[in-house]
Structure formats: structure tokens, C-alpha cells
Image 1 (cartoon, rainbow, N blue to C red):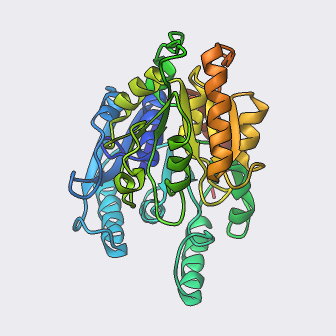
Image 2: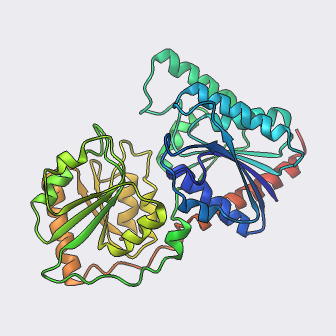
Image 3: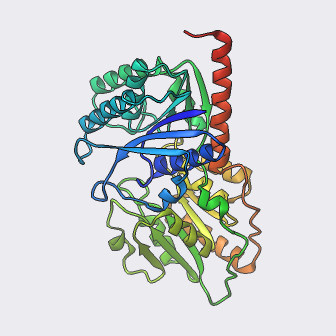
Length: 388
């Protein structure tokens, strides 16, 4: 099968969308499919680059085209011009495709796919979403702008064969735009996580600190580190390592705490090695329940206990971790975090954390299979119904 993917972000671009499609494309190629990718071309000045993702995306059946951006500043016009360039690039090709998959955000990926479908007869178009766009509760803008964006998105989705989304709670939002088939295909654990050896785990002693790792960023008004840092400053025999880029002064907020170490943003392969060296993996909740951090599935593929800090202890992540007995959940305030840290520390030091085996159904290999099964179903349905 010949698959055309328009993801905007792809190796070596960093971030969850690039991780998603670098991995899924790899597993699709390993199953014998020819995968062509149309992504953006980014420089280290505009976006963090993760060269380790190129190891994942390196396969003879993957052809990756990185289409230049009009300029490096993040503006809507830059993305629109990119979409036009992608459509033109595909139109100039002689290759025929069996399926087209576009992945947002940004919405420019779906615009590029719509332009491609206007000129090419590709039997199946799947529109993949990491986050909502026009119906998102986080996007700023006037009522007029939101009305226009919603009309644009509805026009695009009118031509889509199926939608794929990453969280169950966002289904209702997309139903405002699209009445067709919606499939849940979440984020997943990378090839690095799935192939890593998690059986070797350090055994802390009474004198050595229990090591907690948070691989992610801190932001203004959400995921701020103040409560987290305060809790760790108040607990002995623990150590917090943070790796990521931040929108706040994390170093200043650390306030010189000797048991908190701040590292720069690391490549995914290096993050996995750091996770292997850690005792506990920390996740901070997103602003809304229709988002699940991709690292949740990464952590579930390990044998490390998870500490999930959230303002909603019944959200989708908390429910998932509780059902699978994969972690500890606490409220997003210093007192609750401190109590959770102390409990997890004591459990790890006693050697009674008894982490379950790595979850086998959370890897991107499983997600790729879900996409291929969906494609197969859609193609069969189209064959039965006949061409439009």
C-alpha cells in the first residue's frame, strides 16, 4: 500500500506530533508499506531539533520530503504558504497513493491535504488531530475569528473519510464539526521505549536519595513549578531532575534547592536513558481533560512507578493510571505533592513499589496497526459502495 502522510512536524523536528508520526511511519514501513511524508523544514533557530528521531524514521520504505517554510516566524501566512507548497509538490509527482493522512495541529496540514484532494483522486483521507482547533477552549481570539475558523474547519472536514483523535474526552468537541466516523488512536510509547530494557532498576538505600524525573516544560499559569519545587524542598532523601525548556524562570523558582537539578531539553533517546536511571517518573496535568500528555504512554511502557499531579483527580489520565495500577495520583498543591512524594519515597526504599511489567498495548507499533486496520476497513467500505 502507498501511504501519503502530511504531518507538518516530522523528524528531526521535536515535539509530540513529530514523535507520533516518525514512529508510526516507521512501523508502517516495517509492515511493507511505502510511506511518503510531506513535512515542514525547520531550523534549530525556530524549533528544537531532535536528531534521535531520525534514527526512528530511517527506513528504506520511508521517503521524507521537508518542504521549506516561507519564513521562520510562526504566523498563519507562513503555514498557509507551506500548505500551498506541499500541494504543488504532490501535484508535480507522478506517484499514486492509496491513502492520505494529514495531522493537525497546525490546521495547515489539513489545508494542504484538502488542496491535494482537489487535484488527486486518493481513495481515503484520514484527518488526524492531536488537539482541537476551532472548538478548542484554549485558543484565543474574538467571536468573529472563532466563527470563521469553525466554518473553515467544517469545510475541510466535509471531504474527510474519517477522523482520528487522541483522547476520548475530545469526541464531543469534534462532533460539533463532523458527523462521520471518529476513531480513537492515542499517543504512544516510542520505538526507543518499546525496545529498551526496563528490568534493571536501581535499588535505593536509606542513605541514597530516591530519584524523581520530570521530562517536560513549565508554563505561565499552568504547569508552574512553584508548588512542585516547594514540596521537594521540604522532603529529605529525594532528588528531582527536570529536563525541558520553560516559559518561566525555573532556575529562579528553584530558589537554590540542592535536591532539584535542571537540565536542558534533551533528545528522546537521551530522555529514555535518563528514565532508565530514575526511580519515579513525574507527570503534570494538562489544562483540560481533553489532553493527555504523550509521556503518560511512554511511562506505561516502563517498569517505573508514575507520580501524576493534577487538579482533577478523576480526569482521563488519573483514571487510566488507576485502572492499570501504574502510579500515584495527587492534587496540584504543595501539601498534597509533599505527602505523595514521601509515600512514594518510602515505598521505593522498601522495595515494595512492585511495578507491573511494561504495558505492551501502548506502543506506537500498536497505534500503527490501528491506523492500518482503519485504512483497510475504509478501503473495503469504499469498494462496496463504489466510487463517488
